[in-house]
Image 1 (cartoon, rainbow, N blue to C red):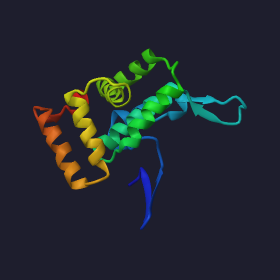
Image 2 (cartoon, helix red, strand yellow):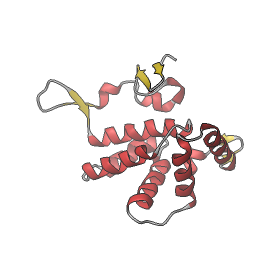
Image 3 (tube, rainbow, N blue to C red):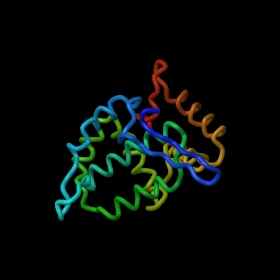
Image 4 (cartoon, helix red, strand yellow):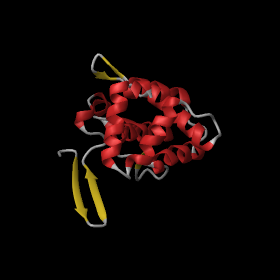
Length: 168
């Protein structure tokens, strides 16, 4: 695709992405069309980086893309947990504002519930159970995972439009 160049050999798959978000993600791609808007100079002035908040928002956008494609794993959830622990003073209001612009604020709530369930002893919900199943089947059986995600999308559809991300 125009978004990525992929090389595959028996023990390795390498993807070179030409942008932060593929165009087929619509508003998410538009949001990152001028990604330098989010860049901050590092302390030396020689490089740029995202703020912890903008980096976390991007991680969530990238994860949502993979979640819809059934290509996620437990490492992804662990990444969110570790990032939040490493950056405990992130501006939650700013992140929620940006995630709302992207239509991912409810999905973010589900990720927080999943982190709470996995790492903080919070009780499981229907959404965390569905997400956990999807995570653990993601790399094991693509056929099973595709069927599970299609079933969830059918279950959470409204007038034929997918409401999966909003529901989870």
